[in-house]
Image (tube, rainbow, N blue to C red; front, side):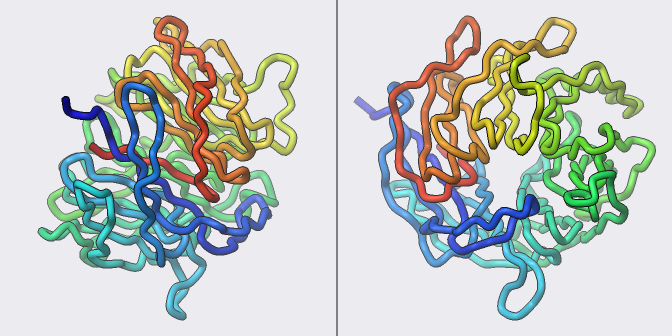
Length: 371
């Protein structure tokens, strides 16, 4: 009988790095680690680590083939200011990675990757560099030099954290024709019209989406129908719910809801991080560093959210998490306690229950399934 198994790749910081929050992360990750994931039990089994990779803080496996990409979150590389992004081939039997090539991202502290709808391009954003770029993916699945490089300008209301632009993520519109770049420094999701024939992004200012001053918009996700956009904020640990009109690009803020329970309304030193939609589209999950919990929201029929649970992440600094493809488990990477903790997802309520599974993962900041 064939074993029901997927691969889970994780990345993290391999060397000390100064974060935007002012924290210095020591960086004890060994590289990109591959685990075998048992779909029946939710257990992880260590397979190998691909080392000698600098700060692979965000990893993204290609669902269409045995390839993986990572940012190298750096201030400079080989004497040149800026980060890089690396392309790898995955050995399907072992999960071991072979480096194909590496390209400059033309900005410091690259922190997120995304594919174009057709998989022909890779998008990267540079947090400290205030910029982002588009890389054509070659026939060998390595990366060509950037076909488009764009930079944001301006600042937000928080002089400590919003002194300049800080792009954090690219979000594709449901039809794939537009790219929204969430910028923590500007409190805005800046919109670009995509030309996927040329690999260009063209400013579409009238479709920009604004957060409230000081929220620090971080990551977002569209609902399955494409009619709602959920945006996690870093500085206030809130979720903004937007009504989205795909035809006109107009958005309306429907709700802003805290990722804290009533007794913990003050964000204080806490920082919002990851956001993820359950495959059923019934629940939304968000991570909060500082309080170190996962907030579970029920998605109501009108698209608004109701907070139903705050579950401890099982460690410190839940930087990122992911839901298993079948929707049965949620896995959290706790950056500062070097663990991945697994939770069962209740099929009726969406609430989390510790599965009693904890795997060692040094300075883990990102998780990506591949099958």
